[in-house]
Length: 149
Picture 1 (spheres, rainbow, N blue to C red):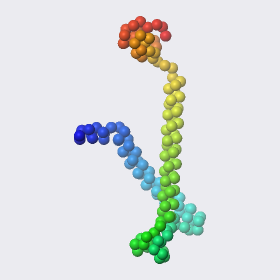
Picture 2: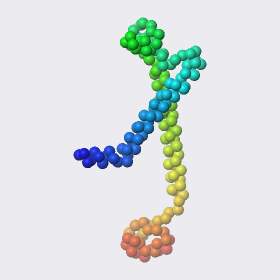
Picture 3: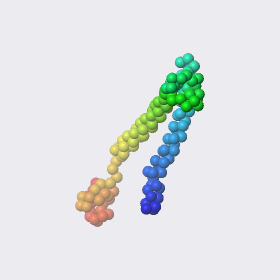
Picture 4: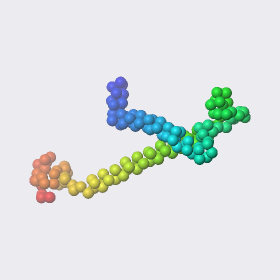
């Protein structure tokens, strides 16, 4: 059983997936920092010096100066500012993934067009249907004499 697991874990797809997850996690952290530290402060400034990460509603009915104060007091809060940041974070990651998939699909289409336009190098043997080079005069599988191409 251990051998089977090792073979599974070392297959190319599993390793590729692991690398993708690690890079995705790192990209997520970078995107979160981009949203929290670069994008939201100017937006907050334009909207009247609002700190989105500090926008919340106290469900206990008491007023707290900041989200940190409410959490320190153990008050239940509805953190809609953090939710806005997370939604923007998701939108950026989703757009980046869209661009990546779009480029991969375009590359696949270009590759497929290149393969279609390439002249065939093989032809089937009329007797055994084995692929033989176009210039061949004898089939390598059934040794039949082939008609000229």
